[in-house]
Length: 250
Image (cartoon, rainbow, N blue to C red; front, side, top):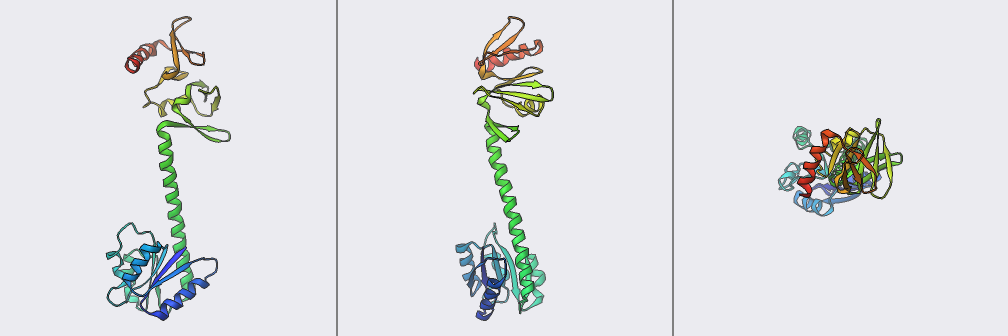
């Protein structure tokens, strides 16, 4: 993990660098800068996770850092100074911590640990958000089927039909597989209600209209699927089915 020290005092920079390197269980690659503008350039180049920032410096105070760096800020700031009157202003800048010089090693370790926890938490949040976005993209054309060994993501085009089986649902796939899913049919009806190619022809069936090959009146109204399975269509849904077919296949 990269860290940058911005301090106009050479002795303070060198001492803090040594203290950071000596902290156990923390691996830091440390860079140093002698003023704020040099530090800003170094931040943009190295993309550190932690910045140790002196407040009292010639030309520009460390508190001015956000005048030179625009959001989003992807690092944590720990202010370092010999003057405690800056503490309130430092925390207004969303600092992780505020260390008074001469810096105590125990306080330094606590500040670094605090920064690490915040970084890890944000990284996990970002990972969850990225995964959520990826799954949302998948969900556009796929449906998640919870199977014993995990989750199977199946394209809508690969599903022939759903068949209710009590509180379970049988999902018949184009490749001939059948998956028994521990969810009632109504869950899939709700998930696919915006998909025009899926039609609930019967209280026990939800079919993909792409794979209906025939509407048969033999032995009662039925839909013949591409796997030659006969699926009943209720009287109340027959008229809706014919309208849907007319709209889609016109």
